[in-house]
Image (cartoon, rainbow, N blue to C red):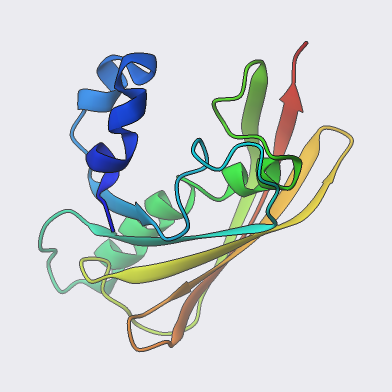
Length: 153
């Protein structure tokens, strides 16, 4: 799967200097990035992720990295049922709450599959659920996020 810079190259001008920033998390969309999927409604997306580099063996470090990474794409999922994306004109999004449950040890510097679903979108709010799996298929982390999601006209 293409890395972030390869996947976002068509949007380089639109993203400006943000495109060139170093990325602490290597994200790879399984089914295409949200911008390329606009106009095609979907209830879910999957992303492979890992820290960019080797981390120490401290499990707290790995939990912190995955906590950071879990917020990068989950709320975007709530726009997908409408064939929209975080870059749709007038889109406004802000996280209202974000909860996580850690089920078993994992390494954030190894590939993890983040399976994300839009649970509800109503009244300018979106709720999304995510499950983060290790490469061998074990559920490592469950995530829920609610956010403000609306299109200003």
